Length: 298
Image 1 (cartoon, rainbow, N blue to C red):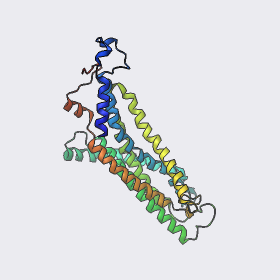
Image 2 (spheres, rainbow, N blue to C red):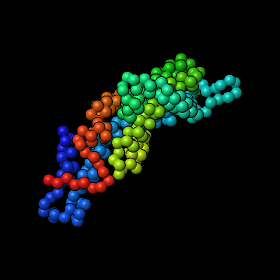
Image 3 (tube, helix red, strand yellow):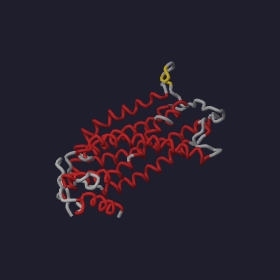
Image 4 (cartoon, rainbow, N blue to C red):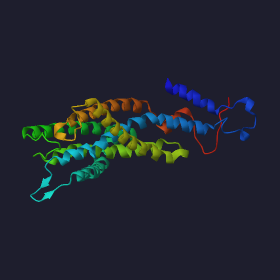
């Protein structure tokens, strides 16, 4: 209903009003828009639901550079007797998982997807984004389970007391699954998003595609900060996100993100099902956008 109303509203922008004069070349652009202008705006509006449902992935991604690093600082990071892994360097597993995921996708997933889906590209951009969103959900589940394990070890060794988190005898490599899943999800989501926005943005607005993509990343980090603020206020005297992680309930925050990501994925499926790719849609409507201006007359 909303889309039909918006479509009718935009169509009126390209209708020539008789009282404006007969010479359309002299008409003010504020009074009338070309058919190309109207169709380009429609394309961007169609993309907005997909754009909005991509934000949650980057909210999950933000946790890997914040709370997951905080988890790592409280765990055993020693390799051998003399070397200790810097907590922040665990993000190297992002790079490793991406380097591993890309060739697996190209060599294994694409050939299988071509046969099953009859698509020469393997997975469509929306399907790749969907895979990335599923991986982000699994990453938050893995993160919650790893945090529960870390909390149990801290409690069993009586390391909960104190104003700061004390290192517990649990290997930091328990955090690898969540880093790996988010990294693999990024390989799917990043390329899927970039391909989608470049492919679907109007010809005259290609530079806007990069802006749309990058805005999902930045808004994801803003949403992460917003959720942290809300959780701090709601949990009050028994904070989930305590300064001493051994006294907090970080796993509940991860469960919250997993639930929100699952709900977001449900909305994404509806939006992706509704979305029709530009080339197919214009072919069905018999519309061919050209650089030369076209005007729809009443």
